[in-house]
Every structure is written in structure tokens, then in C-alpha cells.
Length: 432
Image (cartoon, rainbow, N blue to C red; front, top):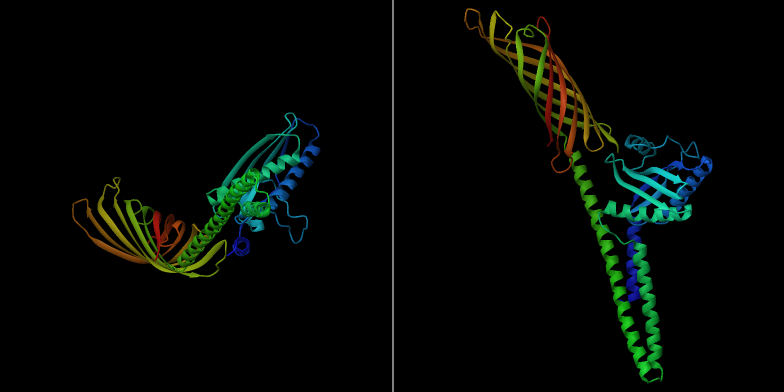
């Protein structure tokens, strides 16, 4: 393959990847403008808005295979765009991101200091999926020209955000292709000069020396041409590998969503609020296990809604209350069986909230002695109902999803009088 044809092949491949591999979209939100050393605040604000507009234009021209800088989309009902209060923290950034349906948001402050003829910014890039700031930039420059400052700021933002998002120094495709074009043009020029000089009838020492110089220069430029093609290959391979890893991760997460059997294992404390045993015993320990099957009802990009059905069991033990002077209880062991119906909201990729209720059956074994030392074992059972609230934090939603959480359970049983227990538990959760 001839060199020009090889160049066109790589350029075509680069353009094909640029079309078919979507880049990250980073949206710019209006900067908060702070003025120092001037009484003409209005003029300074206009100057700050001009810097922001120039920055938008400059960044839009630096689009590459990794990301695109964009403006906040306009509202369908208001062509001027919905305006929200200035963004001060991640909560404000989250609200703007949800309103406009965007994942990456750049915002911050621009300070204009007329006394020192300087401009400075404190900028942040917010990522909605992580709900966190992934990039910070503080950049100051003593310069009187706002246009030049905006151009410098755009160059720094483009380069540093590329390195932050990819985790590596990446030469942009435009630079590589430009370098290739330049080396190719120089090589063709030198080759033309070489041919012209060699075909010349000049045979003196100067001509021979010039010819050797041209040959050496041609060799150097061919090496630069080869280096440019190598860099282009490396860039394309890096992008393909990153996209492949991203697709594999998404496939694993989709597979994990198909795991609808959930197991909870929990332990904690409980309290007797009502019933015959509330004044005569002290709660000691409780443990809980649940197995549920989830039915997806309303999946969406932001949250998934499930109806879950399951069964559960609870063990609890109470011991003698030292203040009891008449009956010496040894212990009370209870086992509760439940039929569980709950609604489950899975937010993003890590947080789940659930509300549960259903019927239950409680069985108790009671071992105690009276004041005369006579042992009187006994049993009791009855039906009841329960309600529960809980939250899960899922650490790994891929190969074997698991997490931790907390929940509270209120158990009501139809003894006479009524018995009410409150249980507070920490749990492990597994999807199998």
C-alpha cells in the first residue's frame, strides 16, 4: 500500500470511529461572576459573560474522540432556556443534571480583578452517575485581554479534562493528522527537490553535498511520518479497547439485573413495647433471614421499581429482668415465620429502598421457675402482622451482587393483651 493510500485509510478509520463511538458530552453552565476593584459592576458582568461565550466557542472547536463540550439545552416552551439559581454545590448540580437529562456538568466562578488586571476561575466538573466532582481547575492570569484569557482557559480545560477522563496523556486526533500531513508534505517536497537535483547536470561537490543533505532530511521526515501513523494506530486501539471494556461492563450489569432472587441475613437488637413480657424480661439478641423474589414493574434509566414476594424467619431471645422479685425467668425463645410482600425502589446503581408488610406466626418456648424454685416450662403461639422499612447499599452490581443495609421491623401479635416488638437490624444482602 502506498503511503498516501495508507494515510487515507487511517484517516477514514479515525472518522468512522468518531462517528460510531459516542463521546462524552460535557455541558457548560453560566459562571458566577465576581468583580473586584470597580464600581461599574454591570460592565464587569458583561465582560465576564463575553469570556464565557468565547470559552464556549473555543471549547466547541476542540471536540475530539473522548468528549464534546456543549451548551445547556433550551427549553421547548422557553427558547431562552430555563434559568436556575447559580450552582454552588453538588446538590445544585444534581438538580440541573436531572432537569436537563445530562451526565457531565461544568460550572464554577469567574473573578475579574480590575485592580490587578487579572482573571481567575474556580471550575468543577460534576458527574451525575457518581454524584461527585471528578475534576477541579483553578486558573489565574494577569492579562488585560479577556479574549486571550478565554483562549488560554479553553486550551487548559480541553487538555486536562482529556487526561482526567482517560487517565492517560492522549495526543488529539487533529494534532496527529496535522503532524502526518506536515511530514508527508515535507517528504514530497524534499523528494521533488532530490529528483530535480539528481537529474541536473551539476556534478560539482556542492551539488553532491546538497543531495546527501536532502537524502538525510528525507530519511528524518519519513521517520516522522512513520511515528505519526504509529501514534494514530495507538490512539485508535486505545479507544476501541476502552469501548470494548465499557460494553462488557454494561453487559455484566444487565446480566446482574436478571438476578431476581434476593437473600437477606441480619442481626441486631429488639425492644418489647407491649405485652405480658415487656416488664418482666429484657431483650437479649435477635437474628433474621429473608428470601425474596423480585418482579420488575417499571425499569428506567434513573431507577427500577420492583414488587417482591418472599418468606422470612426471625429468632429472638429474652432473659430475666433483674427488677422482677417474684418470678425468676430463665429465658424466652421465640421464632417468627413471615410471608413478605414489599415494594422496592433501586436508585441509580447502588441504593435500594423498600417497604414491607404481611402476616406472621409467632411460636414461643418459656422456661422459668417461680419463687419457690419450681420449674414451669411452657409454650405459646399466635398470629400477627408486621411492617418494615429498610435501605440497601449495593457494592457490586455485576458478577455476584452483594451489599449491606439497615432495616426496622415492627411485629404485632394477637396475644391478650397485644404484644408489640420493635427490631433494629443490620443486614447483608445477596443477589443469586
